[in-house]
Length: 203
Image (tube, rainbow, N blue to C red; front, side, top):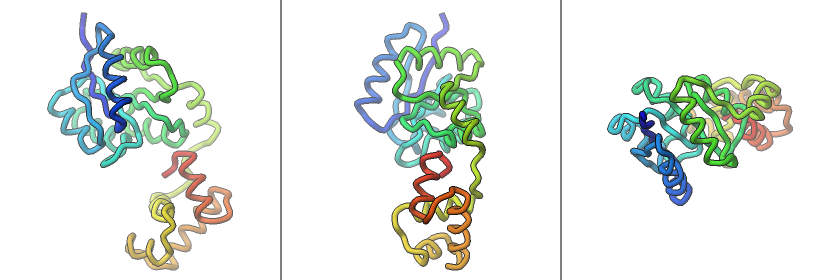
């Protein structure tokens, strides 16, 4: 029987330990590496060469989607499974764009994760059906890269001047990007726009 080696990235130590323990009970799955931050994913993967990487999205250091892109470029033989609390349609689209093979939400039984690991290793793509339907309803991310940058900078309450300084833009340009983002998200102000964009997984 072929054993599927797995790298597990989850920032909550208790959750990471529980997942590792439960996956380790499967005869054909072996967790060979565990990391708690996104910036440790690629080095650990290059060292252990897992067949599958199970990544959370919201990780300190580097998010799971960026780490998935790193793996696709530097270790293309490693299939990526995203497991997240945040079932946001925009995240699913981003995941597919960087070659993620499975996208699951954390409230599913661990048996489904084990099954997804096997299916991904066999060459299949596994997507949570409710999330796939939501992604189709929501449509593509309407925000440009610069609009996303400006909205991201605005999420912590920074002033237009602060955002302009951080992103090396003029204040009028920042206002223009914010206005465009507010219009595209159908909201009333930049705080609502940032919140809406986060909820859809557009940031």
